[in-house]
Image 1 (tube, rainbow, N blue to C red):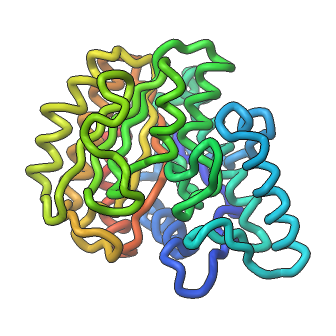
Image 2 (image 1 turned 30 degrees about the horizontal axis):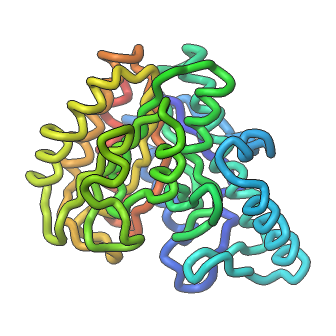
Length: 310
């Protein structure tokens, strides 16, 4: 069974006119899943993350800065910039809390056996948020918060995070580099924002990066996962697999230059589901990250999730 976590608060995050990380992204994803083939989705409301859950990943000074910015935005009814690309609107903090809370609830659900797979259709994205700094459209690192919850609340010893967003998840890597019970695997375009994720960063160890040059297509993407990333994931024998599911490596995306199609997302969705079945009883939690072409999201998200329905 596939469970969907989302919340209307995630639509209320407004980073500003013309910003690519717009509410239309999430509306498009939810509309794409409002289809007969997804009629069996178990749809759940995402709870808000707690302060204690956030504190497992993010430093107190960072959390205090975000709370102060959120209060200023609410008071003035205007956005407050956390960095050049990351803006807190009057209702953004509620969206970020629901996004991280969705990851925590999804982890609880798959580990309790309430579902085998879960997808968190939430925004803002999270994988650029480091333990010290919100950045790159990201306020809280939802996937890292979910991983930390699995370790602390459920006592897991091996949690894997697979990231196929076109941008490197520097925030997730920063978290994983200090947590040996977490394995972080990433394919991404390089060079590209945020300028991290080169071969050998924190490796050998619990981080493995597979940068792809601009123009790489599905064959190159599948090769790095088949030959480098998925074998490392299997050797890790994870008890839970979390996925930073970004769809901005699609050929239609305006912010990057890889050349993936819907079929490549179906392929990676199938491979990750099979690995979850083989190593951790199917326990697979995916969290929406990037993806800025509405046309791409309409096809790529259902293609990725279809293999996880059974």
